[in-house]
Image 1 (spheres, one colour):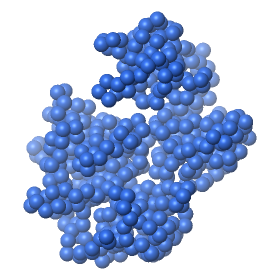
Image 2 (spheres, helix red, strand yellow; image 1 turned 120 degrees about the vertical axis):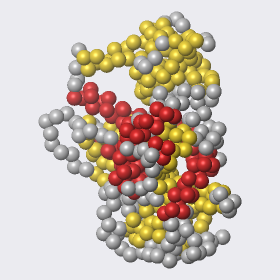
Image 3 (cartoon, one colour; image 1 turned 180 degrees about the horizontal axis):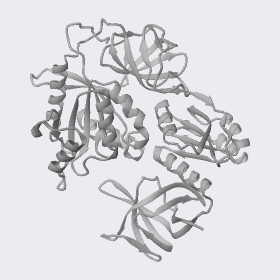
Image 4 (cartoon, rainbow, N blue to C red; image 1 turned 45 degrees about the vertical axis):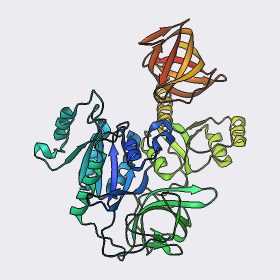
Length: 485
C-alpha cells in the first residue's frame, strides 16, 4: 500500500551507528530490530553500509519511526564512515564498556566533529563483569566528548546488545534529540536523496541504495544522480517489499538507472554536474605509471562500489591497479592480467569455474575472500616481499585438522600437531589439497579443558583463528614467521 503523505508531521530521524570494530554496533541494531545480521556477515564485521527504518514506542505510547544506518568499523572503511556522518541527523557512537576508546573510535569522533552532527554515546557490553564505565567516561572527556554527568552535553547511555539493558532508554534519547531538532516532513520540498551504496546486479542491472532527505519519489519518475539518468522502474524497502512512493527518512533500493551511479551522489529531479565522493568505478582500466621501484600489479573486483572504494583506499603506492570493477570476475579480467603478470583479487564476488580454469591456463593467480581485511593483508604481504626480497618464511610447525566442534557458538578446529610447534599469535597458512587458500593467526589454543600458549608435535588441541577462516577437516595448518636472510 502506498505511503500517505502528511505535511504536518516530523520525518523520522536518520541515525548513523558508528564505532570501532567488534564493539557491537550491528549486534545493538539486531537487538533493536530483532534481526540477526551479524551472523550473515562474513567474519562477524559489517562490510557494507546498511540502512533500515524501524518503528519504536515513544514515551506517549504512540509508534514513531527511526531510520538507522550501520557503518563498518574496520580501518579500511573510513570513507564509508565519512558518508555515514555526512548524511545523518544524529550519530550513535557505540563504545565497548570493556575496551573503551580505540583507534576507529577516535576516527569516528573526528568525523562526527567535522560534520557537526549531534552524538549519543551507547556504552555497550555493560553487562560484562570486566566493564569499566568510569574509565571509559574519562577517555571520552579526553577525546572531546564530555558526558552530561561530567558537565558536558553528550548523552551517555549504558546498554547491552546481549541482554537488551538500556536499549529503550537509548531509543528515548534518540527521539528526544529528534524532537529538539524539529525535523520537518519535507515531502513537498524539492527532491534530495543520498546514495550510500550502488552495485550492478546481473539480473536487474544498476541498483542504488538511497535515503530520502526531502521531497518524494514515485515509480515512473525521472530522477538524476549527477548527470546519470534514472526512470524509476521499481523501488524496494529494506523489508524487501515493493513500494510505490518513497518519503523523507525512507531507506530503499531503486531500479532503473542507465548505469551504476557513484556512491556519495545526491539524487534530485534535475540533471546536475555534482561531484560525488568517489569517481565512478564500475569499469575502469588504468594505465600503469613507469617506475624503477618494484610494483605489485593487480586487477581488483568487488561486490559494490563502497567496498571497492574501501579496498582502494587501503592500498599503498606500491600497488598498481590495472583494472577495477564491480561484479563477477570475467575473461576480460584474466586476459588483461596475463601479459602483465598481474593477480586478480576478488572481494565477495563469484568466480565461475570456467574463469578459474582459464586463469590456471593463463597462469593468473586469483585470490578470493568474503572478508575485506584478508584481501588487504594478502596484498600487503606480497608488497613487503616484493620490496624486500631478502625476507624469507621459516616454518615453525605444521598440523592437520582432524575434527571440528563448537563452544559457546565459536567454531573450533581440532588438530593433530605433525611437525614442530604452534603457539598463540603465530601467523599461519590454511592449506587445502596442497594449496594455500587463506592466511590468518592463531587466536587461542585449548588442550583438553586447559588454555595453553603453545602445543608441540605429537599432541592434539583445539584452535581458534582471527581473522576467522572457513576451515575443513583434512586441511593443513602451517605456522610460519618472516625472517631476513
